[in-house]
View: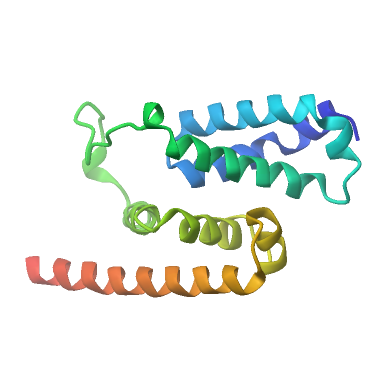
Length: 165
């Protein structure tokens, strides 16, 4: 498979993964562009591996972690954007997904990465361990802790919401 064929076939999936990792569509596109540029330079070696997609996903996760560490890439998020129209009429399903996504974004980076790779990318523990360069037991531990934290935060959010009524 040539690099052009790979990039054409997998760019949208890589952008989706990057968006889930970063929480920002524009940063995700920049992240994928950087990763694909580096992958292009190494494509001869990458294409000879058994699983070039896992290799590129690992590059994506590692690059995301490197971006996170750089102080120059940090941005300050705001809770609500005031200049958007239609925020009041969102459907309940969209609001629920958004609330869940906020809980996922609040997880530590490794736990969030495991959740994204497992539930959004539908990868098994072995593939995730390969991408993160850790054992499958570590992957399961991160997933267990992340799910426990999500459950706890969901219960706390539900109780807080019920108290407002």
